[in-house]
Length: 144
Image 1 (cartoon, rainbow, N blue to C red):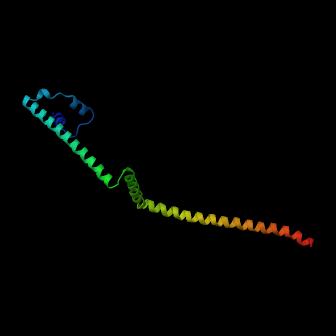
Image 2: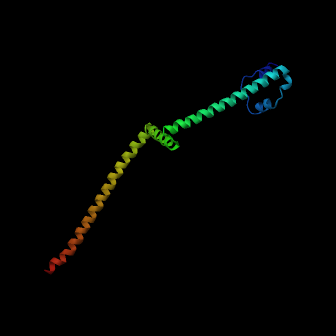
Image 3: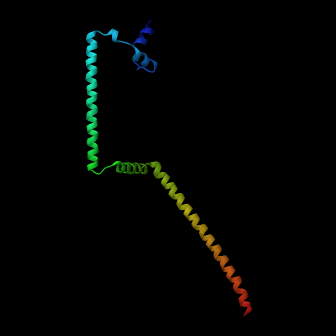
């Protein structure tokens, strides 16, 4: 019996089927006419308050747009500012800094390697050019 009583006194929120069961239950027969009238009055009051709040929010949104227009702010400027801020925030992260250092170091090594390859190729072409010039000029010297 105690297990059944505890089930009725659970404090956990409703989930899934429980919510559906409560939503479909008809409690109106359990209420007195006076309670029904009070609830109806409260319902009307809440609906009025929600309508008023929507109107106030709409007016404030219009005012916000007017102020932004006066300040020269538009959607594109806001996107640029948001992007700039996000880019700055990302650049200040430790992960970005470490990645930047690693890639910078790798880039320096790659630049040095390409430079060495370029120098070696240039030297080879220089040697070949000298060899070709030398072999061409030698027969000419023999004819004299």
